[in-house]
Length: 262
Ligand SMILES: Nc1ncnc2c1ncn2[C@@H]1O[C@H](COP(=O)(O)OP(=O)(O)OP(=O)(O)O)[C@@H](O)[C@H]1O
Ligand SMILES: [Mg+2]
Image 1: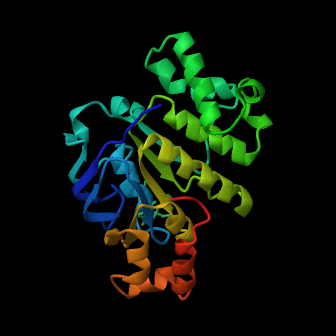
Image 2 (image 1 turned 135 degrees about the vertical axis):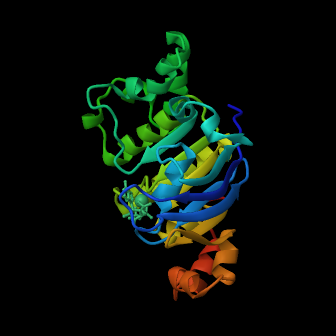
């Protein structure tokens, strides 16, 4: 399954919500190279979700431009764009009356794939996220654990081979053990597919564990953008230093002996 990622570029992207008195995001310039696992990290309300959603136009920027592989995201209808960009959120949002297979197949169906191709793709994806197709294909969401449902959400987002996958605190609602195993899964999926992933979290350890690049945000701005060891060893300012915290040395050592293969 050779699938590559797209480059995502934000140029001067700003967002002011209609009812807002201040900008939720201020003139962000950010390039995420094809195939990168980028993590947006920062405190609650700093604009992570807003910035993420400008990429698939769930939020329309009030300033600046989003480019996907050099093409303006506004050049095509937003609905079309969204079918090519996977999106996973904390509340998985599986359709309760659909089976697992039907949930995974939503976008391929919209794209008019034939049934045989859809069936094959569903089984391939269930295999990728380590859910036995025989056992899981025909279950309903209520017959899944939280972690399994989250995996199905990932499979659904990947169904039509998106070149960009957006994930907004996807593992925040599961317990620590399940979260660790989901982190392993997404790291492995990323190694296999090299999809560009933009992943939002406010969990520093999750960011360090998964990211090729960490983009630290504060109050609607990007305050640092670099590989995890840079963020730990050379925090750009006091805010970043405080965010990675007093445990920076422990975290740095943990990076040298990663729990997962990078
Ligand atoms: N639909 C909206 N309308 C108006 N203001 C909004 C809307 N969504 C978010 N905001 C505001 O924009 C700012 C950034 O919100 P955003 O959801 O992007 O933060 P976040 O970093 O994702 O926070 P969290 O970690 O809590 O999810 C906040 O001040 C928030 O109140
Ligand atoms: Mg958010």
